[in-house]
Image 1 (cartoon, rainbow, N blue to C red):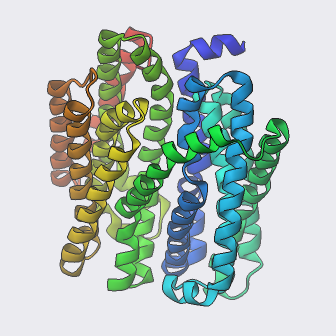
Image 2 (spheres, rainbow, N blue to C red):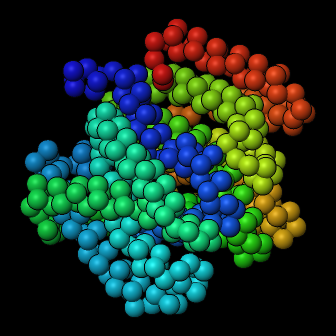
Length: 467
């Protein structure tokens, strides 16, 4: 059974989709509950905490998760076990250093982040647990064991939902209910993540190995700056909104981001499935096969983007109270940003394969600086819409830079169907126009979405493959 899963791209994709949806989709599936229990102010604090947690997780992790694919190519199966243990030791060392620094400077950090000291001190431990979970699920996904990711995700998600609701209900002061949500979110990652960390350390029994540490640091360190730049791209708008406006604005904006994250979750799951097959085909120089799969992939995600956008307005009103309904005007811009990120994945995956991590970091840093610049210009003038537009401009720059790097800097064959991409982009832009002019025509939009769904299903059945 395991071998058939490994060889069947559709089954692998199925489990890779289910896993991330359960793991990362918790915020989406519980939106109707938490938006009402927390309110915009508490929801804003949770959003800010999550943003800083992502930053700290990246720094502490040294981005070792990104090394899994290349390590599987460079090291034998026996060496890989030792490599995982050695890399976890490196992460533990990093976590210890940052934990001590955070505890020493907790008052300054609390003032800077505008978060309570309790949450500031919790953050490094939460980050370490998250690293354990992320590393394991990424490893399962790369080795086409998506069913394991699915099992971990279900366990983590159910634990988190139950504990968050229990803690929120036990906090009588409504102004402090964010504590219950954050502690409920942190506990499963702490428990499950620490178990995974212990497993890798015990199995590999390798604390330090010069070759492993050298490979890990040289490959992944530039990716820390790449990932931090991605955080700036995706999260600095929330922090800047907090500075320019207030936590309520952050709450509404954060809710919109959380809602559109369902499309990002699907993209990440598809991309995680795509990468191992792309690596295999690139290694064998099967360029025609790559192009054919790319076209199927682009068609699929274009359809998913269009369908998601067309039904989003009514779903938002179903999920959240009227205080959040201002988010509907932000949806087209955010959805288009996710589509651009999808397109960017093709050149950046190509760069990852050829271990071009320094240029990856440089390109993403450039886009992050553009994001800060345009956010500082647009947020004071347009508020939340300005933040969304600034992020979109930055993502377009990100895609453009990495496309140029892949096409002209790396002296290898880069397969990218430009004409097909242009047609798909035009289709998404047309859908945004339709969304705008049919705001008060939900039946028409849902009918169009259903039609797109039928076309996607027909193509998948005809090709007998997701890609």
